[in-house]
Image 1: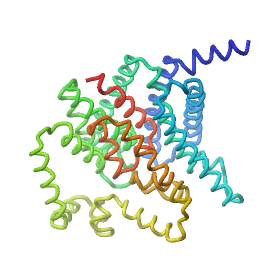
Image 2 (image 1 turned 180 degrees about the vertical axis):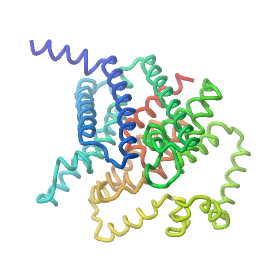
Image 3 (image 1 turned 120 degrees about the horizontal axis):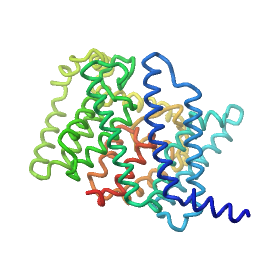
Length: 393
Protein backbone atom coordinates (compact mmCIF):
# COMPACT_ATOMS: atom_id res chain seq x y z
CA UNK A 1 0.00 0.00 0.00
CA UNK A 2 2.72 2.45 0.99
CA UNK A 3 4.82 1.55 -2.05
CA UNK A 4 1.85 2.12 -4.37
CA UNK A 5 1.22 5.50 -2.73
CA UNK A 6 4.87 6.51 -3.17
CA UNK A 7 4.82 5.33 -6.80
CA UNK A 8 1.62 7.28 -7.49
CA UNK A 9 3.05 10.47 -5.93
CA UNK A 10 6.28 10.02 -7.87
CA UNK A 11 4.55 9.56 -11.23
CA UNK A 12 1.74 12.11 -10.81
CA UNK A 13 3.56 14.81 -8.85
CA UNK A 14 7.32 14.70 -8.43
CA UNK A 15 8.17 13.48 -11.95
CA UNK A 16 5.10 14.89 -13.69
CA UNK A 17 5.44 17.49 -16.43
CA UNK A 18 1.75 18.34 -16.04
CA UNK A 19 2.18 19.03 -12.33
CA UNK A 20 5.12 21.40 -12.79
CA UNK A 21 3.46 23.05 -15.81
CA UNK A 22 0.37 24.00 -13.79
CA UNK A 23 2.53 24.86 -10.80
CA UNK A 24 4.44 27.42 -12.87
CA UNK A 25 1.19 28.85 -14.22
CA UNK A 26 -0.02 29.20 -10.63
CA UNK A 27 3.22 30.96 -9.65
CA UNK A 28 2.86 33.26 -12.67
CA UNK A 29 -0.67 34.39 -11.84
CA UNK A 30 0.28 34.71 -8.17
CA UNK A 31 3.15 36.98 -9.22
CA UNK A 32 0.79 39.24 -11.19
CA UNK A 33 -1.91 39.29 -8.52
CA UNK A 34 0.51 39.89 -5.64
CA UNK A 35 2.45 42.69 -7.33
CA UNK A 36 -0.77 44.40 -8.43
CA UNK A 37 -2.10 44.16 -4.87
CA UNK A 38 1.15 45.55 -3.43
CA UNK A 39 1.04 48.44 -5.92
CA UNK A 40 -2.48 49.38 -4.77
CA UNK A 41 -1.39 49.23 -1.13
CA UNK A 42 1.75 51.33 -1.71
CA UNK A 43 -0.17 54.02 -3.57
CA UNK A 44 -2.42 54.28 -0.52
CA UNK A 45 0.55 54.40 1.84
CA UNK A 46 0.18 50.84 3.14
CA UNK A 47 2.66 47.95 3.32
CA UNK A 48 1.95 44.43 2.09
CA UNK A 49 -0.49 42.60 4.32
CA UNK A 50 0.77 39.79 6.54
CA UNK A 51 -1.75 37.40 4.98
CA UNK A 52 -0.28 38.10 1.52
CA UNK A 53 3.22 37.37 2.81
CA UNK A 54 1.97 34.15 4.43
CA UNK A 55 0.33 32.94 1.20
CA UNK A 56 3.50 33.73 -0.75
CA UNK A 57 5.69 31.92 1.79
CA UNK A 58 3.36 28.90 1.81
CA UNK A 59 3.22 28.71 -2.01
CA UNK A 60 6.96 29.04 -2.58
CA UNK A 61 7.84 26.89 0.42
CA UNK A 62 5.60 24.08 -0.84
CA UNK A 63 7.00 24.43 -4.35
CA UNK A 64 10.59 24.35 -3.06
CA UNK A 65 9.78 21.25 -0.98
CA UNK A 66 8.35 19.51 -4.06
CA UNK A 67 11.49 20.42 -6.01
CA UNK A 68 13.75 18.91 -3.35
CA UNK A 69 11.76 15.64 -3.37
CA UNK A 70 11.76 15.62 -7.18
CA UNK A 71 15.53 16.15 -7.16
CA UNK A 72 15.92 13.05 -5.00
CA UNK A 73 13.90 10.94 -7.45
CA UNK A 74 15.53 12.51 -10.52
CA UNK A 75 19.06 12.82 -9.16
CA UNK A 76 20.51 10.62 -11.91
CA UNK A 77 18.74 12.57 -14.66
CA UNK A 78 19.15 16.21 -13.57
CA UNK A 79 22.16 17.92 -15.12
CA UNK A 80 25.12 17.91 -12.73
CA UNK A 81 25.59 21.60 -13.49
CA UNK A 82 22.25 22.48 -11.84
CA UNK A 83 22.40 19.87 -9.11
CA UNK A 84 25.99 20.52 -8.01
CA UNK A 85 25.55 24.30 -8.08
CA UNK A 86 22.41 24.01 -5.96
CA UNK A 87 24.12 21.65 -3.50
CA UNK A 88 27.22 23.84 -3.09
CA UNK A 89 25.33 27.12 -2.64
CA UNK A 90 22.76 25.48 -0.33
CA UNK A 91 25.49 23.92 1.82
CA UNK A 92 27.28 27.27 2.10
CA UNK A 93 23.98 28.92 3.05
CA UNK A 94 23.23 26.34 5.77
CA UNK A 95 26.80 26.55 7.09
CA UNK A 96 26.65 30.35 7.31
CA UNK A 97 23.27 30.25 9.02
CA UNK A 98 24.54 27.75 11.62
CA UNK A 99 27.74 29.75 12.13
CA UNK A 100 25.72 32.94 12.63
CA UNK A 101 23.52 31.13 15.16
CA UNK A 102 26.57 30.02 17.16
CA UNK A 103 27.84 33.61 17.27
CA UNK A 104 24.45 35.14 18.10
CA UNK A 105 22.61 32.37 19.94
CA UNK A 106 20.88 34.76 22.36
CA UNK A 107 19.48 37.11 19.71
CA UNK A 108 19.12 34.72 16.74
CA UNK A 109 15.59 34.28 15.37
CA UNK A 110 15.19 31.48 12.82
CA UNK A 111 11.66 32.54 11.84
CA UNK A 112 12.82 36.11 11.19
CA UNK A 113 15.76 34.88 9.10
CA UNK A 114 13.58 32.62 6.94
CA UNK A 115 10.74 35.13 6.59
CA UNK A 116 12.73 38.28 5.83
CA UNK A 117 16.46 37.83 6.49
CA UNK A 118 19.43 36.01 5.06
CA UNK A 119 17.69 32.62 5.14
CA UNK A 120 14.89 34.08 3.03
CA UNK A 121 17.43 35.51 0.58
CA UNK A 122 19.21 32.16 0.30
CA UNK A 123 15.94 30.37 -0.47
CA UNK A 124 15.08 32.94 -3.16
CA UNK A 125 18.49 32.52 -4.78
CA UNK A 126 18.72 28.70 -4.72
CA UNK A 127 15.10 27.88 -5.63
CA UNK A 128 15.29 28.78 -9.38
CA UNK A 129 18.40 26.62 -9.95
CA UNK A 130 16.67 23.48 -8.72
CA UNK A 131 13.38 24.31 -10.44
CA UNK A 132 15.08 24.87 -13.82
CA UNK A 133 17.14 21.69 -13.46
CA UNK A 134 13.95 19.65 -12.93
CA UNK A 135 11.99 21.50 -15.65
CA UNK A 136 14.75 20.93 -18.18
CA UNK A 137 14.60 17.15 -17.72
CA UNK A 138 10.85 16.47 -17.59
CA UNK A 139 9.21 19.20 -19.65
CA UNK A 140 8.23 18.81 -23.33
CA UNK A 141 9.12 21.72 -25.61
CA UNK A 142 5.44 22.50 -26.28
CA UNK A 143 4.85 23.17 -22.56
CA UNK A 144 7.75 25.61 -22.47
CA UNK A 145 6.44 27.34 -25.59
CA UNK A 146 2.97 27.69 -24.07
CA UNK A 147 4.35 29.19 -20.86
CA UNK A 148 6.55 31.65 -22.74
CA UNK A 149 3.63 32.67 -24.97
CA UNK A 150 1.48 33.31 -21.89
CA UNK A 151 4.26 35.30 -20.24
CA UNK A 152 4.85 37.36 -23.38
CA UNK A 153 1.20 38.36 -23.44
CA UNK A 154 1.33 39.35 -19.76
CA UNK A 155 4.47 41.42 -20.33
CA UNK A 156 2.92 43.14 -23.35
CA UNK A 157 -0.21 44.05 -21.36
CA UNK A 158 2.07 45.37 -18.62
CA UNK A 159 3.95 47.42 -21.25
CA UNK A 160 0.64 48.99 -22.31
CA UNK A 161 0.05 49.89 -18.64
CA UNK A 162 3.53 51.47 -18.49
CA UNK A 163 2.72 53.63 -21.52
CA UNK A 164 -0.68 54.56 -20.05
CA UNK A 165 0.97 55.44 -16.75
CA UNK A 166 3.52 57.68 -18.46
CA UNK A 167 0.95 59.44 -20.65
CA UNK A 168 -1.72 59.91 -17.99
CA UNK A 169 0.56 60.19 -14.95
CA UNK A 170 -1.16 57.27 -13.18
CA UNK A 171 0.30 56.78 -9.72
CA UNK A 172 -0.97 53.19 -9.62
CA UNK A 173 1.66 52.20 -12.20
CA UNK A 174 4.61 54.09 -10.66
CA UNK A 175 8.00 52.39 -10.50
CA UNK A 176 8.73 54.27 -7.28
CA UNK A 177 5.39 54.93 -5.56
CA UNK A 178 5.21 58.07 -3.42
CA UNK A 179 8.91 58.88 -3.94
CA UNK A 180 8.81 61.77 -6.41
CA UNK A 181 11.03 59.83 -8.82
CA UNK A 182 9.71 59.49 -12.38
CA UNK A 183 9.14 56.05 -13.84
CA UNK A 184 6.38 53.51 -14.49
CA UNK A 185 6.40 49.71 -14.24
CA UNK A 186 2.75 48.84 -14.86
CA UNK A 187 1.15 46.33 -12.52
CA UNK A 188 4.48 44.55 -11.91
CA UNK A 189 7.26 45.53 -9.54
CA UNK A 190 9.89 47.57 -11.40
CA UNK A 191 12.52 44.80 -11.20
CA UNK A 192 10.24 42.22 -12.79
CA UNK A 193 8.90 44.72 -15.34
CA UNK A 194 12.41 45.64 -16.51
CA UNK A 195 13.85 42.10 -16.51
CA UNK A 196 10.91 40.47 -18.29
CA UNK A 197 10.56 43.31 -20.83
CA UNK A 198 14.29 42.98 -21.54
CA UNK A 199 14.23 39.18 -21.90
CA UNK A 200 11.26 39.20 -24.29
CA UNK A 201 12.70 42.08 -26.32
CA UNK A 202 15.84 39.99 -26.85
CA UNK A 203 13.64 37.02 -27.77
CA UNK A 204 11.52 38.93 -30.31
CA UNK A 205 14.48 40.64 -31.96
CA UNK A 206 16.64 37.49 -32.17
CA UNK A 207 13.82 35.21 -33.38
CA UNK A 208 12.41 37.91 -35.72
CA UNK A 209 8.89 36.67 -34.98
CA UNK A 210 7.54 39.61 -33.08
CA UNK A 211 5.55 42.40 -34.70
CA UNK A 212 6.83 45.97 -34.78
CA UNK A 213 4.12 46.97 -32.29
CA UNK A 214 5.25 44.30 -29.80
CA UNK A 215 8.89 45.37 -30.10
CA UNK A 216 7.93 49.04 -29.74
CA UNK A 217 5.85 48.34 -26.62
CA UNK A 218 8.75 46.54 -24.93
CA UNK A 219 11.16 49.35 -25.85
CA UNK A 220 8.78 51.93 -24.40
CA UNK A 221 8.37 49.80 -21.26
CA UNK A 222 12.14 49.81 -20.72
CA UNK A 223 12.45 53.54 -21.32
CA UNK A 224 9.32 54.33 -19.33
CA UNK A 225 10.54 52.35 -16.32
CA UNK A 226 12.66 55.35 -15.35
CA UNK A 227 15.50 53.03 -14.34
CA UNK A 228 19.10 52.86 -15.50
CA UNK A 229 18.68 49.08 -15.71
CA UNK A 230 15.95 49.57 -18.30
CA UNK A 231 18.18 51.81 -20.42
CA UNK A 232 21.07 49.37 -20.00
CA UNK A 233 18.89 46.48 -21.20
CA UNK A 234 17.89 48.49 -24.24
CA UNK A 235 21.45 49.63 -24.99
CA UNK A 236 22.98 46.16 -24.66
CA UNK A 237 20.19 44.61 -26.74
CA UNK A 238 20.80 47.07 -29.56
CA UNK A 239 24.59 46.67 -29.27
CA UNK A 240 24.64 42.84 -29.12
CA UNK A 241 21.48 41.68 -30.92
CA UNK A 242 20.63 44.37 -33.46
CA UNK A 243 24.01 45.74 -34.54
CA UNK A 244 26.15 43.15 -36.30
CA UNK A 245 28.83 45.44 -37.76
CA UNK A 246 32.10 45.40 -35.83
CA UNK A 247 33.00 48.88 -37.07
CA UNK A 248 29.72 50.36 -35.81
CA UNK A 249 30.22 48.68 -32.42
CA UNK A 250 33.72 50.18 -32.14
CA UNK A 251 32.29 53.59 -33.09
CA UNK A 252 29.61 53.28 -30.40
CA UNK A 253 32.19 52.30 -27.78
CA UNK A 254 34.29 55.32 -28.79
CA UNK A 255 31.28 57.64 -28.40
CA UNK A 256 30.51 56.15 -24.97
CA UNK A 257 34.11 56.70 -23.93
CA UNK A 258 33.86 60.34 -25.04
CA UNK A 259 30.62 60.79 -23.09
CA UNK A 260 32.20 59.37 -19.95
CA UNK A 261 35.24 61.60 -20.37
CA UNK A 262 33.03 64.69 -20.60
CA UNK A 263 30.38 63.63 -18.07
CA UNK A 264 30.93 66.70 -15.88
CA UNK A 265 29.99 68.89 -18.84
CA UNK A 266 26.58 67.40 -19.70
CA UNK A 267 25.35 65.50 -16.61
CA UNK A 268 24.50 68.65 -14.56
CA UNK A 269 22.23 69.83 -17.38
CA UNK A 270 20.52 66.41 -17.69
CA UNK A 271 19.80 66.10 -13.96
CA UNK A 272 18.54 69.70 -13.80
CA UNK A 273 15.50 68.50 -15.78
CA UNK A 274 14.37 66.46 -12.76
CA UNK A 275 13.97 67.80 -9.23
CA UNK A 276 14.64 64.34 -7.82
CA UNK A 277 17.89 63.74 -9.71
CA UNK A 278 18.98 67.34 -9.30
CA UNK A 279 18.82 66.89 -5.53
CA UNK A 280 20.69 63.55 -5.74
CA UNK A 281 23.42 65.19 -7.84
CA UNK A 282 23.83 68.07 -5.39
CA UNK A 283 24.05 65.76 -2.40
CA UNK A 284 25.97 62.75 -3.76
CA UNK A 285 27.75 63.99 -6.90
CA UNK A 286 28.44 62.20 -10.17
CA UNK A 287 29.06 58.69 -8.81
CA UNK A 288 25.99 58.78 -6.60
CA UNK A 289 23.85 59.86 -9.56
CA UNK A 290 25.07 57.35 -12.15
CA UNK A 291 25.10 54.47 -9.65
CA UNK A 292 21.71 55.29 -8.06
CA UNK A 293 23.46 55.65 -4.69
CA UNK A 294 25.10 52.20 -4.89
CA UNK A 295 28.36 53.96 -4.12
CA UNK A 296 26.82 54.78 -0.74
CA UNK A 297 26.22 51.05 -0.24
CA UNK A 298 29.87 50.41 -1.01
CA UNK A 299 30.88 53.06 1.55
CA UNK A 300 28.66 51.36 4.14
CA UNK A 301 30.22 48.03 3.19
CA UNK A 302 33.71 49.43 3.72
CA UNK A 303 32.71 50.55 7.20
CA UNK A 304 31.29 47.12 8.02
CA UNK A 305 34.47 45.43 6.85
CA UNK A 306 36.86 47.70 8.72
CA UNK A 307 36.86 45.13 11.53
CA UNK A 308 38.79 41.93 10.98
CA UNK A 309 37.38 40.06 7.98
CA UNK A 310 38.34 36.45 8.71
CA UNK A 311 39.67 33.96 6.16
CA UNK A 312 36.55 31.83 6.69
CA UNK A 313 34.38 34.78 5.67
CA UNK A 314 36.53 35.31 2.59
CA UNK A 315 36.00 31.68 1.58
CA UNK A 316 32.38 31.08 2.65
CA UNK A 317 30.86 34.55 3.09
CA UNK A 318 28.17 35.14 5.67
CA UNK A 319 29.87 37.96 7.60
CA UNK A 320 27.63 40.58 5.96
CA UNK A 321 23.99 39.53 5.78
CA UNK A 322 21.28 40.86 3.49
CA UNK A 323 19.28 42.31 6.39
CA UNK A 324 22.31 44.49 7.19
CA UNK A 325 23.30 45.48 3.66
CA UNK A 326 22.22 44.73 0.10
CA UNK A 327 24.78 46.37 -2.20
CA UNK A 328 22.83 45.62 -5.42
CA UNK A 329 26.00 44.89 -7.38
CA UNK A 330 25.73 41.19 -8.20
CA UNK A 331 29.38 40.02 -7.90
CA UNK A 332 29.81 41.94 -4.64
CA UNK A 333 26.63 40.52 -3.12
CA UNK A 334 27.46 36.97 -4.20
CA UNK A 335 30.90 37.28 -2.61
CA UNK A 336 29.49 38.69 0.63
CA UNK A 337 26.77 36.04 0.91
CA UNK A 338 28.70 32.97 -0.33
CA UNK A 339 32.40 33.91 -0.24
CA UNK A 340 35.07 33.18 -2.85
CA UNK A 341 33.98 29.53 -3.12
CA UNK A 342 30.38 30.49 -3.81
CA UNK A 343 31.35 33.25 -6.25
CA UNK A 344 33.56 30.85 -8.22
CA UNK A 345 30.72 28.31 -8.21
CA UNK A 346 28.35 30.93 -9.65
CA UNK A 347 30.87 32.00 -12.28
CA UNK A 348 31.35 28.39 -13.41
CA UNK A 349 27.57 27.91 -13.53
CA UNK A 350 26.92 30.99 -15.64
CA UNK A 351 29.80 30.32 -18.04
CA UNK A 352 28.62 26.73 -18.52
CA UNK A 353 24.93 27.61 -18.73
CA UNK A 354 24.78 30.73 -20.92
CA UNK A 355 25.41 29.85 -24.58
CA UNK A 356 26.03 33.28 -26.14
CA UNK A 357 26.29 37.01 -25.48
CA UNK A 358 22.66 37.83 -26.23
CA UNK A 359 21.49 35.32 -23.60
CA UNK A 360 23.89 36.89 -21.09
CA UNK A 361 22.35 40.39 -21.25
CA UNK A 362 20.23 39.94 -18.06
CA UNK A 363 23.38 38.85 -16.23
CA UNK A 364 25.44 41.74 -17.61
CA UNK A 365 22.78 44.19 -16.39
CA UNK A 366 22.70 42.44 -13.00
CA UNK A 367 26.44 43.02 -12.59
CA UNK A 368 25.57 46.70 -12.12
CA UNK A 369 22.06 46.15 -10.70
CA UNK A 370 21.93 43.05 -8.55
CA UNK A 371 18.16 42.48 -8.42
CA UNK A 372 18.14 39.52 -10.82
CA UNK A 373 18.91 36.67 -8.42
CA UNK A 374 16.66 38.21 -5.77
CA UNK A 375 13.70 37.80 -8.17
CA UNK A 376 13.23 34.00 -8.44
CA UNK A 377 10.41 34.06 -11.01
CA UNK A 378 12.46 36.38 -13.24
CA UNK A 379 15.38 33.90 -13.13
CA UNK A 380 13.02 31.01 -13.93
CA UNK A 381 11.51 32.86 -16.92
CA UNK A 382 14.96 33.92 -18.15
CA UNK A 383 16.17 30.33 -17.76
CA UNK A 384 13.09 28.94 -19.49
CA UNK A 385 13.81 31.10 -22.53
CA UNK A 386 17.57 30.51 -22.35
CA UNK A 387 17.23 26.71 -22.23
CA UNK A 388 14.92 26.73 -25.27
CA UNK A 389 16.12 29.79 -27.20
CA UNK A 390 17.79 27.73 -29.95
CA UNK A 391 14.56 25.74 -30.46
CA UNK A 392 12.32 28.81 -30.51
CA UNK A 393 14.14 30.66 -33.28
